[in-house]
Image 1 (cartoon, rainbow, N blue to C red):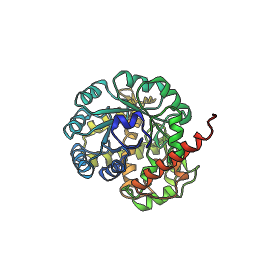
Image 2 (cartoon, helix red, strand yellow; image 1 turned 135 degrees about the horizontal axis):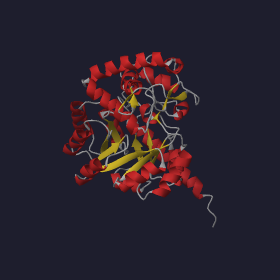
Image 3 (cartoon, rainbow, N blue to C red; image 1 turned 45 degrees about the vertical axis):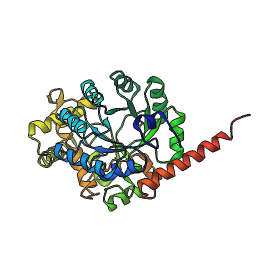
Image 4 (tube, rainbow, N blue to C red; image 1 turned 90 degrees about the vertical axis):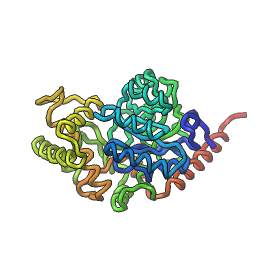
Length: 362
């Protein structure tokens, strides 16, 4: 048994966290992860308030172990989501974007453990100063929105800067990676792509097969999805996005913004507000005609992600959808259950630690 400050903080058996992924991390995957001894998380950014309330209740019905809800602090209804988390007695809340001090305070007052995401040391230091309980530091090898600092450089830097548990993310899939993260000063690991590629993941099998067929060079970081760096599987659709001119990109963005508004039930004012919030949260700045500091193109592009994610992760349209992926996809060739995955990770980690112990001098 590997016990760390993270397992003590969260009350989980193993220092393994399932990353929150839109349209992937719902009750089924979150509960399976928590039942396997890790921390499962619900990704709420692509859910309505009613869907989130139902997801919390369903997850609590599937597992008696701790689980979390991931939210965007910059969402227009973030305060309402916090109230749902508290009312649902969810043990853990994590933030996909920079957290807000007042949301951290409300959650902590209710006894909810809080976790922030960080792509740089200064982000972790700021969140720690606001009272966050732990931080997930994600290196450039990770999937989805990423920074430019490799995991092996980011984790030691963040771990040395804060006195709270650091969860390493970006490039993890096995026990050797867990031991490496512990050596860098982390208290555990978070994995997205590895949990997406499990039998407990709700992603259609045809989509999983595309991931399994990817090589180590099968991902690309592009800004043509929503205006900020995004690591995804390299597909013909992504190549088309990268070749598109500004006019073509604007037409696509407007079409997807309309589709997202229709699916989410948001008004145009609310949809634009979410688009602005996303870019401010990512620290993105643009040029051109501006609305509150952002070009209209950037505002519209912010609605690309949920539409393209839904096409792949729910509808199974690998030809039209977006498939965020860490570089580790090129090393994965199986679809274990969460119990099998976490069990294998911990066995390999223990064996790795035993092997390292043989190098000690008497």
